[in-house]
Image (cartoon, rainbow, N blue to C red; front, side):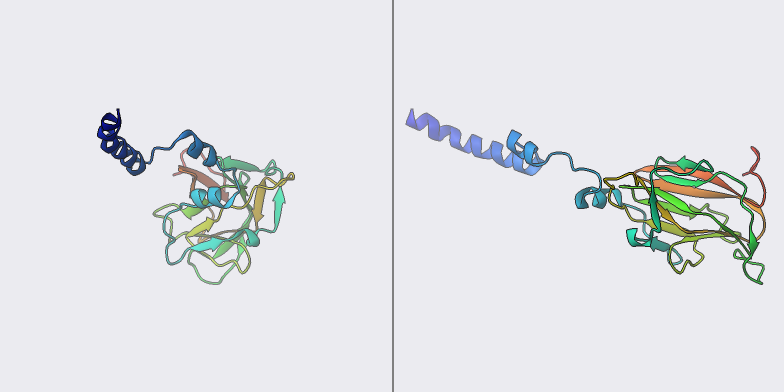
Length: 199
């Protein structure tokens, strides 16, 4: 009996090593690794996996938000289930004397769902015609990334950032929205309505 037990020891040891290497867990380990609640540091770290920020990009922190709202207003639409952008025709005003992508500016607030990191960028091919930017000391950028903000216990489910979009001329500007593994294109009407045929 004693000899049989010793004969199985190497097999048991090998099995334990295999479990450790492949990442299998026991029932106790599973209980200790219960799903992480959204808004906790671990959850935010996972949600904040975004592409590298380009040189002319801007990164916003939760402290840059001016308010939290229970939901975006009626003049907004939700994109990629995490970002709300203006759904109305924005009226731009003169911003700079040059004829570049910052000649006109249209103000609108960016809404980002609590617990979600997000990226908003000017669609490829539009870099010489449009810029975006939000937060304190807003500067025109082609890409803006927002870190995941904690989920509020109250009604504030969306963080709000002030800023807007610059354009060289009135246009229907395509913005690429990325969040939590999803990507979508939102068309922003700056000075002109976005028709179905608008690229």
